[in-house]
Amino acid sequence: DSGVTQTPKHLITATGQRVTLRCSPRSGDLSVYWYQQSLDQGLQFLIQYYNGEERAKGNILERFSAQQFPDLHSELNLSSLELGDSALYFCASSKGHRASSYEQYFGPGTRLTVT
Amino acid sequence: QQQVKQSPQSLIVQKGGISIINCAYENTAFDYFPWYQQFPGKGPALLIAIRPDVSEKKEGRFTISFNKSAKQFSLHIMDSQPGDSATYFCAASGLWGANNLFFGTGTRLTVIP
Image 1 (cartoon, one colour):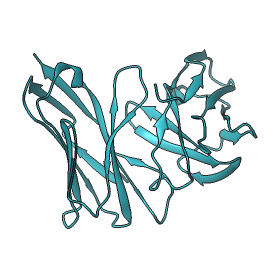
Image 2 (spheres, rainbow over the protein chains, first blue to last red; image 1 turned 180 degrees about the horizontal axis):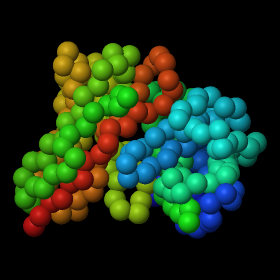
Image 3 (spheres, rainbow over the protein chains, first blue to last red; image 1 turned 30 degrees about the horizontal axis):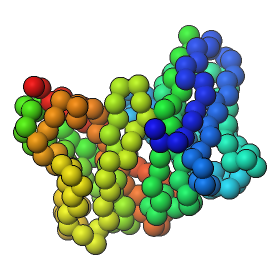
């Protein structure tokens, strides 16, 4: 158990809908990273927040957004969902803001299925 | 483009054998190279990591070998066990530039008894 929690575990929704994925980092960690894992794209970095502020952005679509709250939990919002958004979404947390300086610990993931 | 190239895509090893997974990178700014292990239905778990100031790091049955001049690093699993059957990802990150882990495409390891 990494100490990172994610809810829900599974999510099934229809195209065009909007969903929110939630992540609670390990105690003491200030950074939250979001990743998308699909069969054909592997693990792709989406976005990082550090202590409430956006720190780095990866291949995140404009339909997707995230935020980190004062209690450090983070939410990833996915809107106007398409079939291709079906994937596993992971969050990871770390103590600091540099990916090369601090180990990242992954949560169990949310499996999103868009029908 | 794929920042970290990983091979092979899949690997079958007999119990007790050595599993070897290779990764290569181009960005010389990378200075942190972790390996993650992922079981079906679970999130990736950090296994072992290395920085370029050493050529090898060993933790139990897992060893990372690092070749800075060739820009390659590999994971060796000694005395492979059926419980090691999982997908392994190499990754890389650097002090400069994009602040995230760049992952390889993964290697599905199957250890047969």
